[in-house]
Amino acid sequence: MANVRFNLKNRSEDSTLVSAVFRYDGKRLVYSTGQKINPKFWNDKEQKARENAKFPEYPEFNAYLKKIEIDILNVYRRHKTDGKALSLDGFKKELDILLHKTEKEKLPTLFEFIENLIHSREHALSRPKGSIQVYRKSFKHLKDFAASTKRKIDFADIDLDFMDQFLQFLYSEPRSLSSNYALKILQNLKMFLAEASERGYNNHTAYRSRKFTIKKEETDNIYLTLEELRTLSELDLQDATRLEKVRDLFLIGSYTGLRFSDFTNLKKEHFKKVDGVDVIEIVTKKTKERVVIPMHPIVKSILKRYKSQVPPVLSNQKMNDYLKELGERAGISDLVTRMRTKGGKRTDEVYKKHELMSTHTARRSFATNAFKAGISSISIMKITGHNTETAFLKYIKVSNAENAVLMSKNAFFLN
Image 1 (cartoon, rainbow, N blue to C red):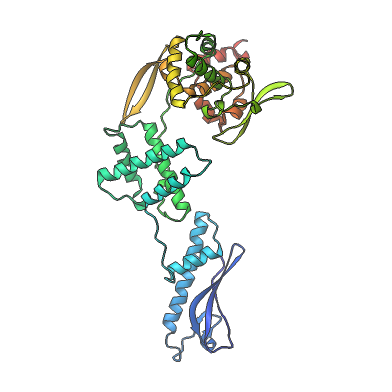
Image 2 (image 1 turned 90 degrees about the horizontal axis):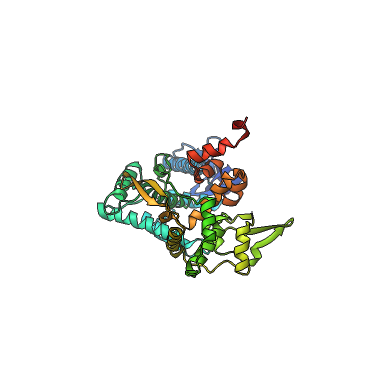
């Protein structure tokens, strides 16, 4: 790495300014030391003042230049280690603070930063409202923890011991949160801390440790089989038009793999033909990815009944309530056991299948049924948006028994 050099501004004057010069990453920093010296007392070779009785302040003068050299190199190394670009203006501002030329700006506390971050994201047009609500709930749990322990929690307090204590708080009564919900809160906290680090407000990095997390618990999320979907599609709902619209929306989701935010916003312009094939082409709201999906006959028949529109949309929560009623009418009542850790205790809970139906069941049904039908994981992932096959295979719900039946149809087991 290049060294810091000191240059005299004007050697023809009896007293001239000394500047520090440092070349880095294709840039040239020239920084005034604020110190003056008569050129005859300057040693160019040793880059410092000569030890001369006629310049008695040389010890302090040289010590100050050495401090400037060390500060320049430390600022550069720190940014290099963090992998952050360092502008000339930014470099000078950091040196001004270190050398007390300017007062360091008052940095926000952890809670002030989180509040400001949520506020700014709340007004960002591209940020879903659901995400903001989750951020606020996570922040509230953090504030409640601080109040219960009577602590002023700041950036320096976030370490592995803090994580253990915070988790115990989340698991305890009256919260008794599930381990997956607690994990989501931790993930949001880590996001807050990472944002603060990016902006130069936080230099405490314990949150980056691989130990600063908990394992995600696999939940037995359900899917509807093709037979169950067919039962739904053939269900007579003339006496319940509200359920009919919910059923039709759910079936569109089950045969497209789209999220609730996408299948409820389909318009005529999304329905196209590609080489004579009817498809749905849409840029997904969450990931901004363009997906193209072959149109299933059941989807075609639904769109035809609604004149190329999707049925009127309810709120996600209201639709989830109606889906449970719809599933009960359709006789989707197999018993399902869900293993869940809540309040730090693992329990088995038994439900009737329709009690677990939600709008997301449609997307999971699409992925699982397509996989069971022999469509490649890669092809399905182009629609579901999973980045890795490992993540996708965790998402689909094929039991060991179903997997054995699928394997039995392979040529390997037929010869």
